[in-house]
Length: 510
Image (cartoon, rainbow, N blue to C red; front, side):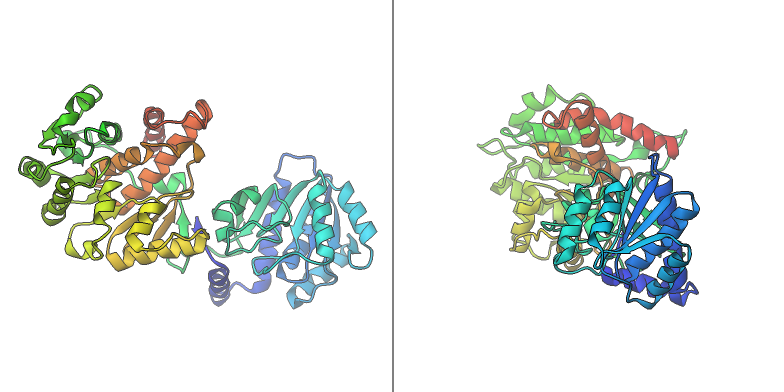
């Protein structure tokens, strides 16, 4: 699902017009599709009251009113701001009046308008569209408060009025929505918290022409079918070498769990062979937890982290690896720094840097340009701030642009963690993950994610797709764990146990 800013949406409408779809056809299609989606709700919608503004969003509302009346609903229309000013909306308004639908002007008879709203089973907000700026003022405040207090099922056309399409900032007052029918594509406010939840169930209605995947867009929101398309069935005539050599260089004496979770995720997600390389003092804790991976204990320093002497024993594994993960729980000592420099210089396969790998990297501004093989960085906002020297913005559009610009400038793939994790490519493509919940805000979840991505990349999936698939399935595992256990008790090991059932669903559609 593409996410378009207001400007990009205008560009798409112009593209559709140039392709032979008139603006009138777009409006009629949008209003009729919205009405059909409302009609399909399994609700007793005997009385529908539609609030229409003066612009094109109001025009969509007038078309929806006519369509709903045609489908047998008792429809009334409230002119929230008086009669329409947009020429095309005027035409739709005249057609609505000709059908003898009940119409009242809120600016002239607010009492009657509010009475109709109180009696409605369904309220439809077609007051403002994606061009809204500022705050609801004047008489609209009272209208919005009455609208929100009503017990009716509430539907917004394109976006709830009072919310700016390009920003994920929730105003103090807006028209509430149980469902939002947005036109053609998602908008930033529909894709990111906290405004996303304020939009209720989100449905996308076409406006007469297909979305162009290569058209300018802010990002793409992941969905199951998109992620499932990244996977390929296993061949009958295959062996463990067919599915890659995943090398996890993680952990330390103080943090053995990072190595356990990363390697465990790699095994469960299907890597042909997973090798867990870790400092030797962590062996008892790690060996007692891992049975499937090959264990590669390496030289350690006095603190139980990697020593630079680890490199010689690590080198043969690096030469065989299909993909490498480095950084989970390794610390930021001199030995770990030496191992990172070695991997950057000699590994010729995809390299995933997580946690302390990113912290060690923060001082190097041109790391992506030093390698021909792809590299993925997986920072949380704090690590991203250390990489860039500035705080990660909270508004969605700026956060997406930061990720895209960073990936392009450094020549790396980037997975920026957070609510709606972002995955960016050096070419400027950005995916917005759609899964996950607050229960996953616990230690070890990042190690699990890194191991999943390692596994997919080792099996031959392009690193960008591996990151997108890893983030989606990682979040889905968190969602499943929260439902079956609880959000507060969600743990990385609990999520790991849910991965097989999720991967089974992927296999069913391959």
